Image (tube, rainbow, N blue to C red; front, top):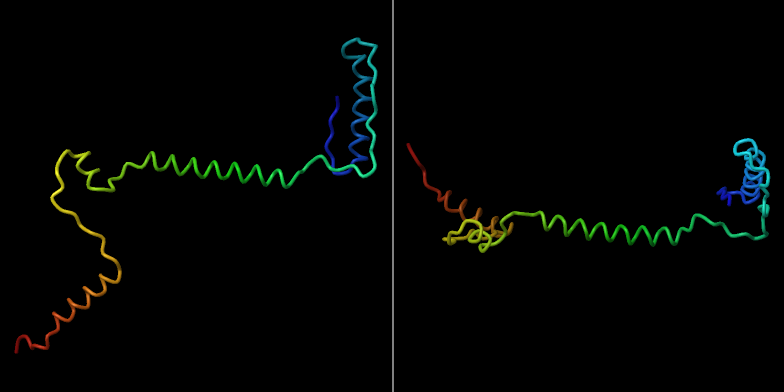
Length: 129
């Protein structure tokens, strides 16, 4: 069978028919076969729907492949991540007990602490002379 894809159905039918005719004529010379026949010619039907592209199917496939790739990549990165995140990770890797931990300080707490330190520094005393 001969398959041709073209935006114009009439042009696709012409290309398919011409290809079949050329094959029929050339196969006699190439393989010494003389009983080659074309079973049916390509015809253009009225209101023929395009075979490709199918945008809805393509979008669905792209969505599924993208989702699987994203989830797979997330799992791969989590599996390959060897950073220490908790106190138990420290105990497990080093085999030593945790003596203390530094907590996370938010931006607001940091600003409050800086204001208190600056107030302590400037008491209004004259130093020197």
